[in-house]
Amino acid sequence: MKRVYRLEELDCANCAAKMEAAIRKIPGVNSATINFFSQKLTIDAEDGAFDGVLQQAARAVRKIEPDCRIIL
Image 1 (cartoon, one colour):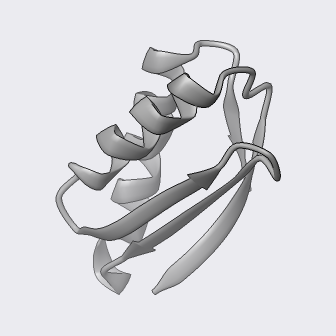
Image 2: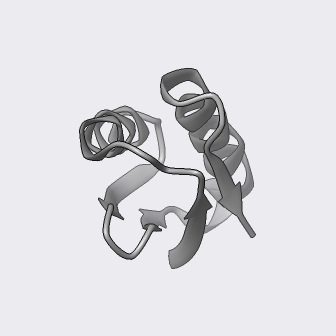
C-alpha cells in the first residue's frame, strides 16, 4: 500500500535524504521517498504493518529534525 503525507517544518534537503534512508530501513517498508521541494513523504509498505511503520517513521523524522512533523 502506498500513501503520501505532507511534512511540516522540513528545512534541510540533507536532512530529508537522511530521513528517507532511515525510513527505508524500517521493517515492512518497500520504498520511501521524500520530495524536499513539495514537502511530501511517500511510503510504500505492507498493509498489515502500516500503522507501526508510520509510528517508526515519525520517530525517525523527529530524531533527524526535531521540529519536522508528518501531517496525516
